[in-house]
Amino acid sequence: MLWYVVQVRTGEERDIAAKLTDMGFQASSRAEWMEQSEKQSGMIQAVLGGIGAVSLFVAAIGIANTMMMSIYERTKEIGVMKVLGCDMGAIRNMFLMESGFIGLLGGVTGVIISYGISMGLNRLLRIGESLTGMAGDISRIPLWLVAMAVAFAILVGMVAGFFPAMRAMKLSPLAAIRNE
Image (tube, rainbow, N blue to C red):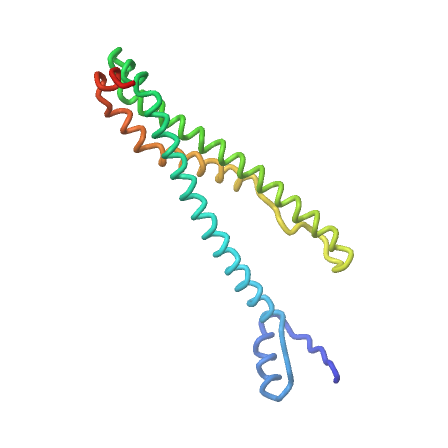
């Protein structure tokens, strides 16, 4: 079996590969390889995005549940604050800040875990570098992405805590004080 290498200008690879295939030769090009790589990357991104969406949904439910429990545990305190004339917006903001802080902790934890996985992948690649001869990091996490991830986690926390905060705001002061 003989192998021939045909070099063509960039952009003409598909046309030349198609002509060679029509002539009865077996031909492949880097453009085909790139298309397949892009399709595989797209599928991997879709799967990871789906996993991330489910995780985000579960985290939002967990934050909302935590905030509802916090309201039930502090019902008497909320009643005392209302009787003393505390602004309703201040009560709402207190619970929104708490849920935003839970989101911040989750976001920072996620960033730390992501950096750990990224460093592990890059270290693994360096081990395989001697076999492939290719150098460089496979995973990089830019600072703008870290900032956006943490900001998004805070936003998700605050959105998840919105309805519990509204519930705390609407509690009857007298019923809240009498609650044991």
